[in-house]
Picture 1: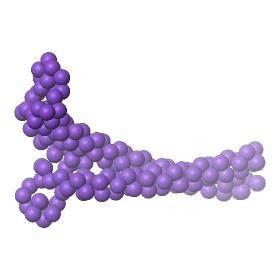
Picture 2 (picture 1 turned 30 degrees about the vertical axis):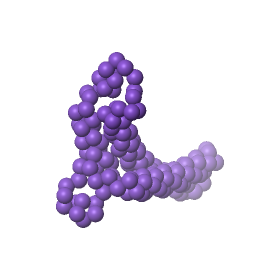
Picture 3 (picture 1 turned 90 degrees about the vertical axis):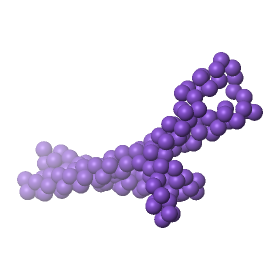
Picture 4 (picture 1 turned 60 degrees about the vertical axis):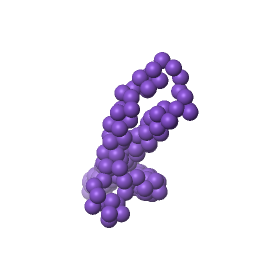
Length: 156
């Protein structure tokens, strides 16, 4: 029984260390992707949805909340052209020589880009929180492993 207790203590301790390592990897990867998305959005220099003071200070859309606000604004403007894509086409096909069709599609592309950024920022937040939880759980497991190891030593 003492031998099993020692193996169990080591197993729990190792699981704790592995959990901490994976948690750190999750946080590092999430932060890297978050920074990548921020940099990519900064290159686009979108200011739609920001107030005039923020724009004067050089602020640009580079967060999930700002991207969602800008995407919502574009969607509102796009729906001013046509409520749906089918309504835009009015039974016909897409005409690349029609400026209204081109404007609608450009708005749709930018809107999708911004909503994809919202999704990406949300996902990096979830991965970061998961990583934090893994670290906490790993520390708890490691602590339990150490306690079990000490108990196994005392009983031997």
